[in-house]
Image 1 (spheres, helix red, strand yellow):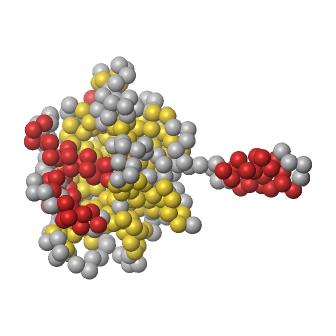
Image 2 (tube, rainbow, N blue to C red; image 1 turned 60 degrees about the vertical axis):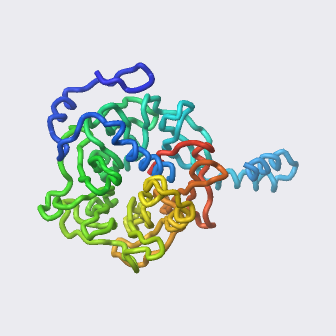
Image 3 (cartoon, helix red, strand yellow; image 1 turned 180 degrees about the vertical axis):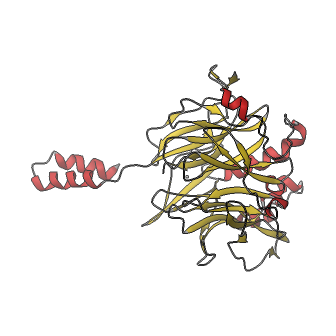
Length: 383
């Protein structure tokens, strides 16, 4: 039996897990975190995770009480045309400062907590069929992948060792891909991609092409048609967004840059966190000078330089053919709404937390899904 977290409940290890757990995750992993050595790594993740936002209806209801049939009809038409609020799974801290998952509407309403773990639950990904959530939960073993339903019931652990992060789904709603990393300042510097069948728990390396497994690869996301995978690799010397077939063949960088280096900051420009649009035509990603160059990690207080570094953090969108690249706006951790609009998040000093923005036909609007002064661990839209 495996303790599920803070509820006192237990999650039963099924025979399929015991059998599948013998399938190694591609690299030998230490079983427990060394807290002293891992402190900078934890800060790095928390920094990135923290980086990562009814008057008209009331008026219509008031008009319904008027004696005017036209006014009543207008209110009825308004209610009929009002779009349904979309659903989100978001990770943010609870009253104990542990990251938990919450099911919420995009306007911040109908919120309910779906995990109650002793350790952080973060990086949720909603399956394309809308029936399952995969997420990362911290444990004494490291960082495990878990699977649950959108209401938080029937939670089960998928991995039992290693440092497993940033899971995402294949179109079949059965397989997931993710990255397994080894300790270091930047997890993307030494990591590999994995694929797992959530029904059989059989896993293996995603890339089988012998040339591709020579390199460090991270942050995988599979295209909606299941034919391509976008990922991050430093095989060319800098972290860039690449795209390849699922076996790793035909790999190529997908988002061109005018320069590899920021001469003012004397630091390389990186690309990370790719994300496919629902129609598979676009890839959004983060681009800028990495957080590892901040004073927090260098140990040298340079507030003006820190500001210049944060000013380089932007979300970009590029076509899957590598053309028509455009800047979406400042921020990190891009996602796409179900109707094909990009989202981004960035620190908001007024909120003492992240501000999450989604693009609309009328411009950008905030998603009020994370309380002020709260740690944040990413979010996922219901497809």
